[in-house]
Amino acid sequence: MRPSNVRAVHAALSGWLVGLLAVGPAAAQTPVSSRLVPRALSAATADAPADAASVTVVAIALDAAARGDAARLAREAELAVTRSGRLKLVRLSDALDADGQRERQAREDEAAEAMKAGQRAYDELDTEKALEHFDKAVRGYEGADLSQRFTELSRARVMKAASQVANGENTAAQLEIRTALALNPEARFSPNFFPPEEMTFVEKERKAVLTGTKASLRVSTEPVPAQVFVDGQFRGISPVDVADLTAADHYVTVVAPGYALTQRREREGEVSLSLAPVAAQKGLQTFTEQAARKPESPERDAALRELGTLAGVAQVLALLVRGGAGTAPLEVTGLRLDVSDGHNQAYALGTVPRGDGLVDGSQALLAQLVSADAPRQDGKPVTHFAGGVSNTRRTVGYVLMATGVALLAGGVYFGMEASAKSDDFKRAAQNSSRAQDLKSTGKTYALVADVGILLGLASAGAGGYRPSPTAAAVVRSRPPARAAPRRLPSPRPRRRRPPPRRRSRCPCLRLPRRRRLPRSRRSPARPTSARRRTRRASARKSSASAVKRWSASARNWRSGASRRRPRRSARRKSGVGRRSGGERKRRRSGPHSTMTISGTTSHAPSLAKPRCFHGPEHRAVRVQPPRRLRRGRAALR
Image 1 (cartoon, one colour):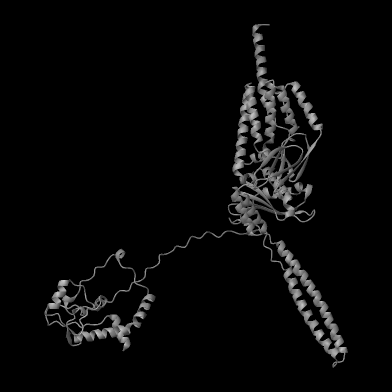
Image 2: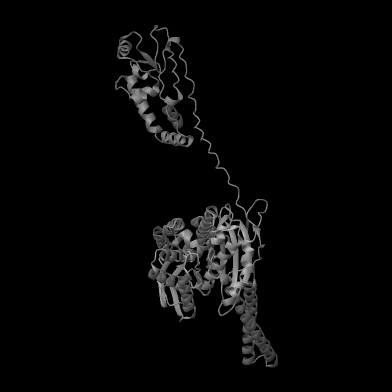
């Protein structure tokens, strides 16, 4: 063969080997069979648009008999939301346990990065480094939420076994294969990663797992029922019996709103898990009890809006479940509420069968709640409050109706007895004592019959009364927020101007005008008219004694018997202005320091009004008492 042909053959063989190495990782990423995919929520949620509204699901049992069925309906509603493709599901247990969800998400992200790094290392034929990364991925997924990530855990175990086979660790690889098949008998092993002898071992172990002895597991939770997942598959609401399990340690995950996610590995037998409440559990309990207290009133929507705010979502899908005794169907009221303004995006009423028919019987009701959004009416939110009466009112009505029927029957009976007594009275002698007894007894029976019939009619009417049902959709909008009324400043009290000053007859006696001070330096406002009237009244009461004192003082000044200087207040009210000491001396010693009081000259300059010093030809000023005393004197007259 020519050298050129040999080189061509070598190049073709090299390209074929490189193609095999490139196809191997792609074949390993072949999707798992649909039988293995658990009814997880993350895959469907990922298909929702980026701007989809976030929704959480809450099921509220209105009686104790419906608690387990309400939890099952909540699970079916979550699946309906994810299947719709138009809403983004936020599981209520994750929304209320933000710290735990953040920690599990961090472990999941770490495992995903380890899987990518291990795949790159395996493609580069660095199998030892790939084994480290795949082992890290297995540990990371074990710490994540396996109710949603069990498929990724199974794939990480398969790739870990493939790395061990590549490193020549056949014993460890066979142990890892046996563990992966015990947890997931349908796990896929690609021949691109496993040689023929290992593939033979895989098929042998798979057959042994499927045909071997089965184990059962009973899971119960306290203090509330919870969703139970075993190896990533939903198995029911606790307490639940799980059968057809392999003899291995299985991953058991329980989820309940308001409680931390609990996850552990358990073998066959009975398992009792105690759920730890989270910080938001009290708020959840308060809002659900408030909604269950009045499930057909505005209080229900208010509680659901508070719950949506607590969970941090845009919408709340609520199912209010009422279950009777026995196998009677469940009465379900479903609504999807907008947290921002309380608008009901969807509303549905219906009955759902219990037991095995719950899944199929609830699909139509749930599809009605997630398929479309109801429009607002004139831009206002629409709410639905059923017109039915509550159980308590219904029970009271039945009791009143039964009482009314009993009273009517009693009234009819006593009426018939009164009629019989009347007939006996007519046949008996009118003057006999028996006739008188029949007469009084008949009247009593007739009175009892009338009262019984009237009370019976009233009781039956009250028991049968039902308020007029409200419309199925009642437009209730919040009144527009009114602006706070503008508080005007309180008007300042109006000041009364003082009376004009009386001018003296002599121009030199006119005092200089007072300078008007600025508003900031003025004295406070005068008292109100009510206070002023009170002060005047008190002044009038003491005016008699004041006038007497003034009259006695004036007589003393006339006679010269007293030279006592009056009080400062009297001088001020008499009109005496302030003067310096030298001016007072000049007035006392000057030729014009006298004044006339009622025709009598007196040397009492402190009691007189100011006068000039031009000479005796000026008219003297008459001394007058203060205004308060003048009024008192006028009152005495």
